[in-house]
Image (cartoon, rainbow, N blue to C red; front, top):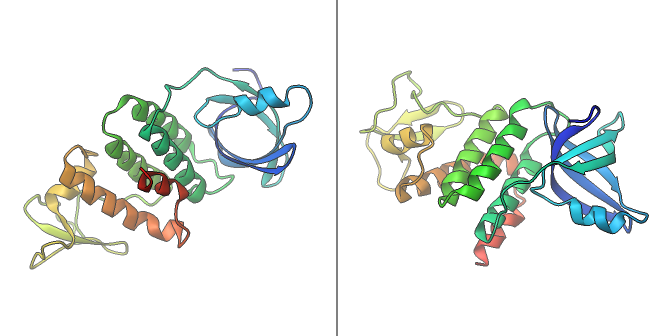
Length: 231
């Protein structure tokens, strides 16, 4: 890699003038960074076509504040193409990262997680499982990880018990299990192992991930979720 360049992915962009974008990049070793991208001159059309989500990039930027300025970029290989519903899943991955990953904090694991999950998403037939793995591991990377092995008293999670989850306490065993409420120990242990191929586990994991993400996302819905509703 050429000196002065960082590996990155463009996650989101919006035009702020005829020749400028405000763009969010996920940058290796540096985390989420917001930049002004100037697109003018004879190469503007070419650069607009090249600066696309899911395309590995090498970027060089400047600026000492929270907002940087993209100076130069190069394409850096390619990722397997995301097609159909997988493309929508990719948009969801991007929007989720933009919404919950803090700007300008050098979170080492987030870039590697994102890159690995793009490849996994392109190769899998279990898109929902791939997204649940991404959500839980992203939360863990941001310091919001869940202990799936032990309940609030320090006892190991039992596949034969049922549990409620409280952010302040963790897993609390239900003394009298209530149908339709909480999670079975089997579901908790499957989430711990990131095993989401069973439809019952998928539904439980989806419900649990939305519960964990809600405080971080607030009341503003994710636009990418609407893509799935329209299918």
